[in-house]
Image (cartoon, rainbow, N blue to C red; front, side, top):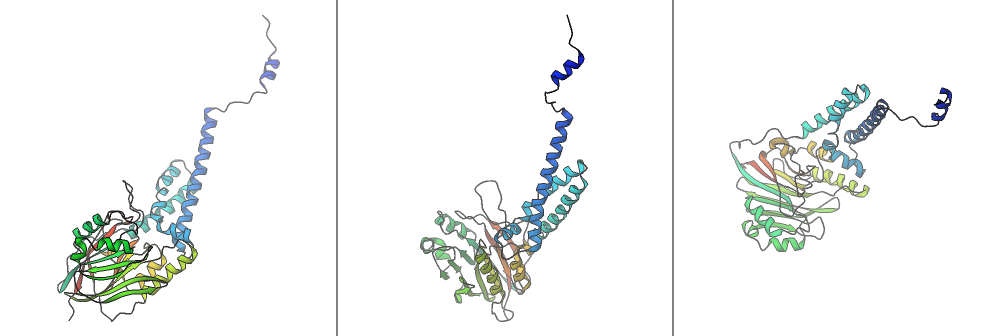
Amino acid sequence: MTEAPAGTARAAGAGRPARPGRAGRGAVARRVAVAAGWLAAAGMSVAAGARLWRSQSEPVLIGLQGTVIWSLLPAYPLAVAALVGRRRALAAVAGALCVAHAGWTLAAVGWHGDRPAPAGTVQVRLVTANVLLDNPSVPALADDLLAARPDVLLLQEVTPQILDRLAGTPLWQALPYRVTDPLPGFHGSAILSRWPVLSGGAFDVAGFPMTQADIRTPAGPVHVVDVHAQAPLSHEAAARWSAQFDRLARLPLPAGRPLVLAGDFNATLDHRPMQRLLAAGFRDAFAESGTGLGATWPEWSGPVPPLMRLDHVLVNDPVTVLSIRERTSPGSDHRRLEVELAVPVAR
């Protein structure tokens, strides 16, 4: 048997590509993982920047502000993975995102829970619900709302068809005093009360109607505003959305009169217009007596919780918040809010 010279064998195999070994494949995987980590960090940094900047005109950035609590959650496993992999720069960026997320989340969570009513007050049970303009389950919704035992009920997205269907339910009989403004589309509303309405009606809020009413409670008159702000889905809509909060902050009202703003604000506490409204002298009921995140939209059919708290109850100084709960409403994409308020007896 003859053997080929060693040089000939090397030449024959010289043209074949060398297969990467296990170490080479591992290095490639690590580089891909690091690149993916930086890409995720960049995306989360954009979301955090949107929350810090708080744009009032760019719909995409407004949307990012409202979901920042969820969009920054991957920062935690990313920080751990970066530390284990000894990627110090990536770990530092992810850690900073974790700190920002923790601070913003803790500020949004309700910690205080229920509280007792102060002496010399009357309790008012107020319920606010976005009913959804094409709700297929209006009778079931009416029964559910009646079971919530409201003294005052504020409804949004009330069309003429929905109002007609509500009029044939026991809820309608239980709350005989009303201010209604049913409209096609999203901006119809209704205020229903078991106590007399002294005055009320629709009024213009930066181009769209909302309803308001003075209700004669056992404690004295209480002014309520049924809020449904424009959804900031375009530049024009965002400008109107911001202007609506400014208009609500300038509501004319006698000094010391109890005032409640409740409904679908289409904003979270992370949005600048909502912060301006709170700075005008209002307090957020969930921040005072809520528990957990209290998200109200969207209401999914399944185990996934809502993402944002778009529905709120705001009160001024004379009003004390005793408790607040979010509840599912049949046929609606919003959870409703049920709140117990304490109103001082008028002297």
